[in-house]
Image (cartoon, rainbow, N blue to C red; front, side):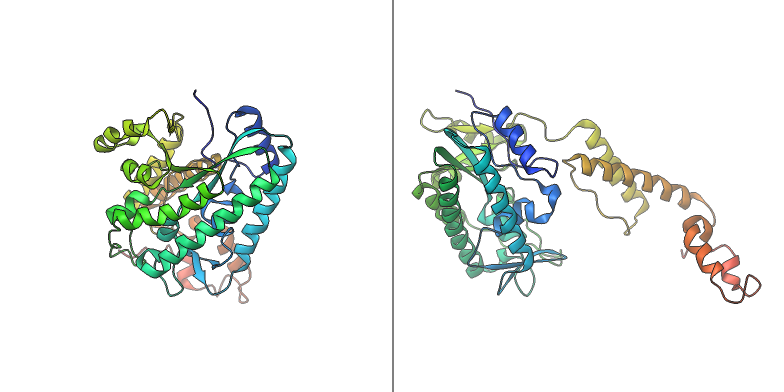
Length: 354
């Protein structure tokens, strides 16, 4: 029997409306929505770090970081998750059937969260082991809470591991970007995942591992005791041969069918990347894969800015009035000696350095 469900992330900021849409459109296997547009506390990483009570995390400009005590961002992530669970309990009164919730896997957390003195937790064997064990305990407590709120639901826990293939291949960059972290063996990776899977099965729930990378280790995930959720269009030839082993009558397999982004979105992102590469401008932020309409607007605005920079770079001289007319007019008006004493460099066109 075929069932349809969502990966987890949805656009928008209204959790109640998103949950109503999920319960209406996906009645066989509804999922707990994640709304990254509400902030980093509601994204995949922040939502899972809010579950871990025995380790402290704080949000820094470079991302989440391991600390001695939990910061305000971790407490805000936990508070927002509790509010979402209250709405879930209210809207799923009398629900009988399956219900899917999502958590971030230990290796994606280790490849994303930084240590107190910098660099990723992935480079510290003791820290990544402690993180995996703390995550397993947090998932167990989270499942007990969800089962208390929705007593008639059959829980399916989706463990998101988008960085697992990169961790196994040793392609996670260090903080400086000049080196790569060491390759993690499959035995250690399977052990850390097994702790999380064991915590899920001990609470009578089903473990499901999701990864959209092409080199998804299907055999290792199956051996660790989890179902697999993958995208068949991006699988490599070797992994595609391992996929039939997951299609057994006793175990299900989830495959992605809906396109992850539209063609117009891809054209905007590719044009912006090409424009940034031609201009070699380090002021504008890099363009990443856009998945929401907000990212589409940012890509369109970036495309407009790149066209503006291209027009300015084609001129022989750049005049300050064309770059920042309002700021220049304000500075000249506030000059106490009038226009006659305005410095010479303010009245002459400015030449960029070669």
